Amino acid sequence: MIAPSTSISDLILAKENVHHLTYFPFHGLAGCIRTVLVLLGEPYENHTLSFREWMAQKPLTPFGHIPILREETKCGKSFEIAEISAIEFFLAKRAGNLLGKDFWEESQIRMFHSSTHALITFLIHTVVQSPQSDRAAFLARFKKTNLPQWVKSHEKYLVANGSNGHYVGDQLSIADIKTASVVEHLINLTNGEGETPLVSEELTPAIMAVKNNLEKNPQYAEWRASQQYQEFTGGNLGFFGF
Image (tube, rainbow, N blue to C red):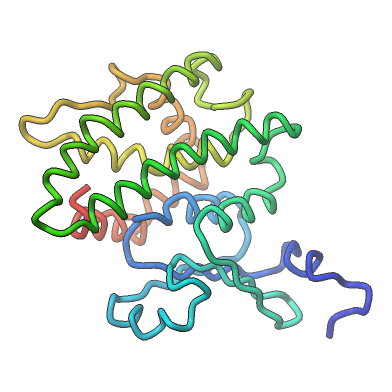
């Protein structure tokens, strides 16, 4: 039973809640979300759907997209959150320390996060989901224009912050996690025969420091070593090729 004085906000922020994330059996656009769930150290479950299962459930979702996060509260009431960035910032708010120390730091964190989110969603929605006849041309343009611009800008800002593995200050933020969750895929994307690497320890040490810094976290390291993470990686390579 819910106490009369308990607000929806109090229910949602309760540490006893169980987080239920629904997505496909690969990293795709959910890598950052899954990472924050791991770092929170709170109960969570990954629910994966086949494409056939997804088509059956799609009409039942808020906007016809996944991932979707369902919060199961201790009183049995559930709340659902859709849209990637909304879920990421919801979890960052729950964590209490991933949005900076003040309003200005949070604004910068949101800016860097938004830039990386725009890059990876463009890659998935515009390039990967383009007609097969156009995909090679779109991918070539992405590698020639979109990705180099992102790399140049983010390396510059990270160097300006001291190349310490963080975008803002010296604490882990949702912007760091967002970039760390996609760097490996960007490396795979430009690591084929005859390709010119764009992200590496030698070329982009500040970007790589973000990835390396997060991998020092014991919870994240354990998650990366898990069978489920490896299965998601295999799913990514099989479906996207990176």
